[in-house]
Length: 549
Image (cartoon, rainbow, N blue to C red; front, side, top):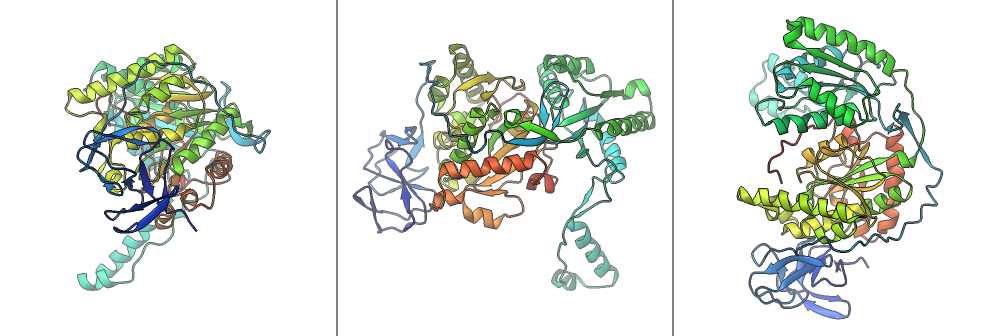
């Protein structure tokens, strides 16, 4: 018989429903019978005992809330009877011992990647075109229109054909009612003509709305992020367009590139106020980019050890199963990668609220623990100064599906990091330079955080979701993992992996974690295409260093 309820941690005082439960049902768990006082939807929780107002609610073994009123045993835990609460944190003790997972299945395994001059290895081979300022976005669009189709990178999506059929019906004199009732549906995506450069995965255009009008710190952070993309192992070369008078100067970008060890690849620079006309700028940029693509096409995939993987850990559209299935599954994958000498990145600092002490204790040095604590404290204080706070992070979708406080959401989100020690703590948009687990300060916003992880060096992103979200990235595969089988079946066009098997008892967390790493190796090698890549989901949003939860 499949499990119907679960206590996540032995010290918890709430119980999770794994399936819909009805009021009046008697649930036997750990030798005790609970009579449910209300309907409990799957992913939600009920009280293991009676709570008085002010009593602590414990889940994942940590404080996640306090009762706002009396809650009877078997009663539904919700936003009306529980409020967010989290424990204080200090530098604490170093707790860096960990049980390394068995990596025998993966010892000696390789992936087929693109080796760069600085020793890093890419999982893709892209050319990027980026603006120093939003004023150049139109010129990027002109270049995109000129290059994408002609070079064979455009994917003619299925809705073009649907629109063509609707136009045909309109021209044939059909009424609105006839058009709405017509059997006109999208047909499959079709690739454009064969690529001119088969070893170049694409030319990507990183449009953004920054570079001027903000603070000098905004400009510096933007240049740091862009430098992360220029120096990224998935990038063979870059074309940079500048207006000329903006805050984000090319010299600032060059400075940030040097901080990251230099480019070691072609970086082509064009300034509109220097060159004059749009035609002069765009024509020269297209010509030199084309020449760069000829050279980039000479690079081919070669075997690389798994220690060259840098995996970004992300979640979005989370639900009450996220911290039970998908997050701990990729946490085990994380531990495997770290044990094999690779790197993993845990970001989204607003979603570490309540587990600060654990993450601080796992830092390998007191200096790193202090840096992490400082970043968390300052970030939350700035949010509170504008009338918010980390406690306001959960979205309506999170709450509807059981994540009723930020501490509950955070405790589950932290499971993505597995159990390995924290070897580095970075502020946005610093670059990962050490193997092991790195904590990177970013918002909880999915796209801002994914953009940042890639800018810090992630060459694969594992993205868990319980509600379904299509987030992708221009240069790195974003692999989607469903927390539940219902979602996996509902959104098969964007979800790559199902971890609902853990909820259903068909697979252990460890088995799922190994299966995920097998999939990562295939994607990293170009053997399997992530749906985010197949769907050309190319989200890119720099973090304007303000309050974003």
